[in-house]
Amino acid sequence: KGNLLEVSSLRTAFYDGDTKIEAVRGIDFTVEKGEILGIVGESGSGKSVMVKSILGIVPENAKVDVSEILLDGKNIENLSKKEKRTIRGRDIAMIFQDPMTALNPLKKAGDHLIELLVRIRGMKKKEAKLEAIELLKMVGIPSPEKRVDQYPHEFSGGMRQRVLIAMALACKPKLLIADEPTTALDVTIQAQILELLKKLQKENDMSVVLITHDLGVVATICSRILVMYAGMVMEEGMADEIFYSPKHPYTKALLNSIPRVDGERTRLKPIKGSAPSLKNLANGCPFADRCEVAIDKCFTEAPEYKSFSSTQKCKCFLAGEGDNLDD
Ligand code: ATP
Ligand code: MG
Image (cartoon, rainbow, N blue to C red):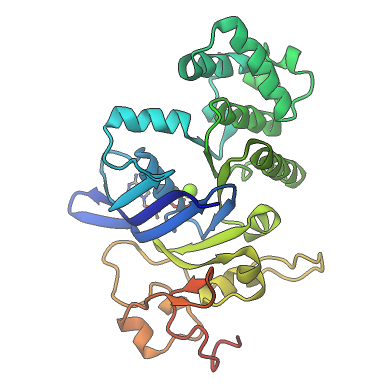
C-alpha cells in the first residue's frame, strides 16, 4: 500500500542555558498506509517529543533538525509555518492523554466539533451540528442528539476521550496520532477506546500512530511496533516479531516487565536502574549500564542496526549472536 509518512534523521534537542538535552537522537521511521503503528518506551524516552517535532509543536527552547518529512510523498518540512498548521489540522490529527484539559469546560461538547467543522471543512453552522451528531454517534456516544448540547463535565472520562477522538476525526485526517490516549482511563474503558480506534482506523482507512509506555496496550491493536529508548529506536518489527522473537535486550526487559497475556498471574519485573540522563550522553549503547548481557564494547561504541527480516531490525552488538541472548 506504500508509505503515508516518512521521516528521516530526526533530531530534537532542548536548550536550557548551557545545557543541551538530546531528547530525540537520529530517528528514521515510516508509517504505512492503513497501519496502526505502536511506539513504546519508558517515560522520558522521547515519544511525545518525536511526534511533536514532526508536527512542529515543540516548545520555544527546542531545536528540531530533520532531513525530510514526507506526507503522502510530499515534503512537508520546507513548508511555511502557516502551511504546516493547515496540514496539522487537516491531514494529521492528534489526541492527547488528558481529555479534561483538552476540552474547554465552558463550551458544549458539540460546539468543540462545530467550530472545527466550520473552520476547517468550511461548513455552515446548521450543517456542522448535524455532522457533529454523526461524529458523536461514530465514536459510540449514546444519545448523541442530546449529548451534543452538554458540557464536558457531564461526560465521564471515557466519554470525554471519545469526544476528543471525534474532534480528531472531524477533519477526516489521513493520520491520527494518539499519545497515551487511554492512560487516564480505567482498564475496561481503556479496552473500549482501543477497540474504537481500531474500528475507526478500518472504517476511515487512515493510519494510526499509537504512543504508549504499555506493551500490553500495543499488543492488542498494533500491526507494527517501534521500541524507543533514550531518544532512539532500539528495535522495530511487526508485532509478532516483537512479541515472539524480540532481539534487543531492552525489548526483552520490557516484555518481562508486563504480566503474561495468558492471564496467568506473574509478578511484574521492573527493569533495573533508570533511563540515562539525556545531557552529556556517553558514547556507547545508552542501555548498556542496565543491560544484563552488555560486553565492554557496548560502553564505548554505538551499535548500528542489524536486520533480522525485511521488517525487523535492532541496535545491539549481541542480538542474534546466540551466546548470551537465547535467541
Ligand atoms: P512519557 O511516557 O512520560 O510521556 P515520553 O517518552 O513522551 O515520556 P518526552 O515527553 O518525549 O518523553 O520527553 C523526552 C525527554 O525530553 C524528557 O526526558 C526530557 O528530558 C526532555 N524534555 C521534554 N520536554 C522538555 C522541555 N520542555 N524542556 C526540556 N527538556 C524537555
Ligand atoms: Mg509522552
